[in-house]
Structure formats: C-alpha cells, structure tokens
Image (cartoon, rainbow, N blue to C red):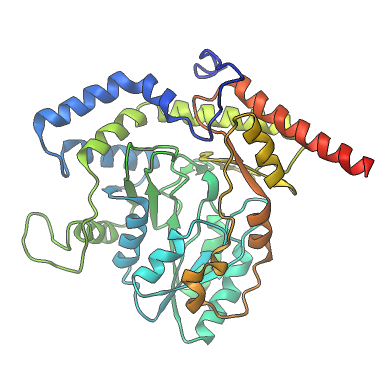
Length: 394
C-alpha cells in the first residue's frame, strides 16, 4: 500500500470533491513556500531560472530533447500550429469528443477543424476514421496539414495506428496531451509519442500549477526553435527584431517553481492514481462501463470516467451524498454553434454523441483515500440496484 493510502481517511459524511487540491497543497506546502521565496528573492518573474529548470526536467521525464514552458495548454496548441505553418486554407483533423479548445485553436490560426469520431472503449480518436476524413476534406478543397489526437482523460491515443495513416497521406501529428502528462505507451512517455506534444498545467491536471500554464515537448530542433520564437513575440533570443509572427506565451516563473515542487513527487502520485483506478475498477465491475486501457497503454488518470445509461441520475445520487462528479463534453464539437460554419454537413459521429450522454467522471487525485473510493462506489452500486429494482417493480 502506498504512503498516500496510509493518510488518515476523511469521515464519510464530509464532501468528496471531484478534485481536491487542498490536501496536495498541504502535503507539499513547505517545499512550495521555499521555492516561491527563492523566486521573490531573485525577482526574475518572467523566464527566470525555475522555468529553465522545469523545461529541462519535463524534457528528461518525457525522454525528449526539448521542453518549453508556455502560458497555457491552449496557447501550446496554437504555438504548435503556428510552428508548423498551419493557417488559412489548411485543415486539421480533430476528434469530436473533447474540449472545445482542440478545435478552437485550429480556427484561431485561420484553418478548418475537421471532426472525426472516437473509439467507444478508449474515448480517443478512432484511427479508422482518419483516412475518410482526409479524403472528404480534400474533396472540399482543403489542404489537410495535420491530425491532432487528444489523450482524453489521461489515456494516450493509439499513435502507432494514427501514424500509419498520417504517413500514408503525408500529414503530421500534433498531440493534444493536455490531460495526459505522465501517461505512456510501453516505455515511451507522453511527449515522445508524437513529433510535438502540447501539455496543460491547469491546476486540475495530473501535473498542475496554481494558475494557467502549459508545456511543449518535442525532439525536433527546428520546431523547438520556432516555438521559442513564437512565445516571445517572434523574437530570437535577446534580439529586438521579430523573426516571425509571435505572441505572449511565456510560463511565469512562480508557476514553474510550483510545478517543480509537484514534479518532485509526480511519479509517486501517478502510481497512486493508478492504484485508485484499479480499486474503482474492482468495485464497479458489472455496475457501469469502466475505463479501458489497451495493451501496453497506461493512463495518467487525469479523470476516472465511466459510462452509465442514466448518468444524470447517478450524478444526482452522488450529489445527495456530497460527492462531486463531472459531466465533461456534454455537447460533441460538431454540435457547437462556434464550429457550424466549418462543417461539411455529412458528419456521422454517433459514438461521440453517445458518449456525450453517458460519461461520468468520478473523484480522482493522489490524495483521495481508499475509504472515499469505497463510498463513491457504494453510492453508485446502490443507485444502480435501486434503479433495477424500480424497473422490475414497474
């Protein structure tokens, strides 16, 4: 049993939030305070030494040559698109079941998002849907430049299968790894699974700051240099000339200091997340559809997300016991008004629409106790049994 599991359990009458960052903060407070005090002492609040230290650390953790700290996960995606020269007249293939930023960044650079369906078990982009989407986009006169899979809820996409398609069509891969830092396929960690990977350090992510933050991971020297220019207004080094169109996309030194404190215990936290997921799996087998990990894929478990026919009723039952639960992506992207003008009009994305009605995310984090997991699971079992009993009586 891990050290996390040995922490004193919270009484079951107390709320169990979907995310509980207070316990982690209390556990790491001394180290965080020490690191923040150092930043205040040296006063280099933009691109200070902690940013460089963090960049080197996340690159080493992921097994890639370059780690670049940026202002947010969304900005990381925009910078990756800009570094690849994607813009007006181009298209990027994106999954329909994910957060809106994945498609919004494509529109932000003047390109067109093309939506594809996802796999019902992994919730990630269906590799079989990519080739038809590329053909359809080309028939519309669009130049498909990239495919952008999302590692949803922390599970890496099937990059080998996706690469087989993109290689055949001569397009590149950008990984939206906002939720999956720490995940892996075999021995290869997120960051090294695609030519360029974009991570979010939003507070609720597996490695989260105390504000906005993000990172870009790549082995490509040219892409790395382009991103570094883009994040500082297109400038190179300390020069005043804009070498290209850029933006303000830097990671604050304060956030880097906090992330360094959290990174020091990150492997242990990943192990604890996996323990929690395994406990949920055992307690909820046969109660609902639990998350799937195919083959040698390992999730970072940003969220533990199940499928239930009456997930709204289940959420109400959890809320009645002060248990937090999340309904993420209740509207698939091809149904968002913001993207209506980009649609081909013949999108058939049934899995994404089904998942948007059925998925439910349960409390997850390195500091949740085994007792709390049992409480969550018992509440769902009681709800399902009660629903079955009412159906039998009817």
